[in-house]
Image 1 (cartoon, rainbow, N blue to C red):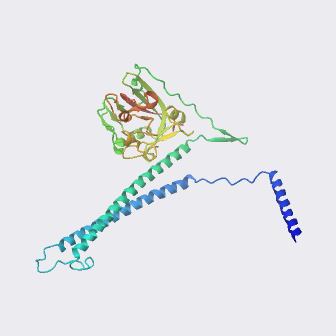
Image 2 (cartoon, one colour):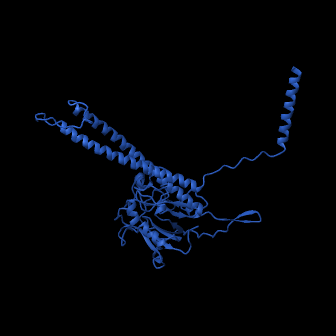
Image 3 (cartoon, rainbow, N blue to C red):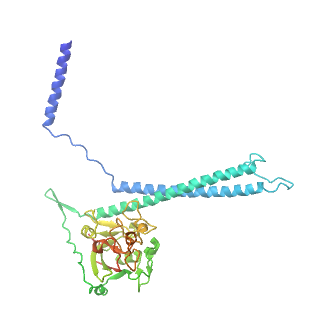
Length: 374
């Protein structure tokens, strides 16, 4: 019996060894590729989360209103119960709210205390729901920006079984440093429109989203034209953006580069090509470029996670990670000594550095014939 068992085990071992040897001679079966969620699925998920946030917020508001009305009725009933007992008849109190005649005021006060405690909890829940809703809206906006970047990817052509990238237009090089004698006066007669000017600190640029959307300031002095007006001028066409920077030593620099400005549904995102974004100091840029939504202290759309760059610094801007540029920052009539103050100023990192507040800036736009900067 032992020999039979040993022979059977040997046969099993030989069969397993033969199987391993034969498996080494052929490639291993390929695993199915992982499946990623499509854009439609991501959109459905983001939209569902947004609707959930709105629903929770409406439920909290409705519940707070009902509790407030009930508290007012209880307060009125409590005042009636605490009237002087010298009257001929005792005050009338609904039996559903008063379990006992003498204990009515104490019962009402206990109910009011509980209602206030519940109202405090609901207020905390309301704040959490509002915070989650803002976070979901920011994530939804990022998904839209990613969709826009994917849409700008260069198409590919198939030929002879080999995939080849499509030919792309050569991008114009960014302008180099200009001397103090150069300015933007030669641009005024070429179809350019001034959209921003900083020169003396006479206008407060730490404004809300609606102010940046509509525009503010004095066109003869410091002003911001308005995001909606700029978008109406450019439409869906590509454009060029000119930026003139001046420091406190009399030096100036004029930059020009292609951009594309989205509408309010994209938070007026400024789309930059990959070469331009790299020259402006961005470290991580996709081949399709970089999309920067506009942010203010009351509308956080920047790319810095949970941090609000506009609230941390000052003014509204197309913030990336809060450290590349901000021409709408706080105006300083002299360079502050403290670094924490200087970081809130007007700066352009790739020219005078992150902590150098500039003396004057001017921004201009020019619509072009191309549909988008690519």
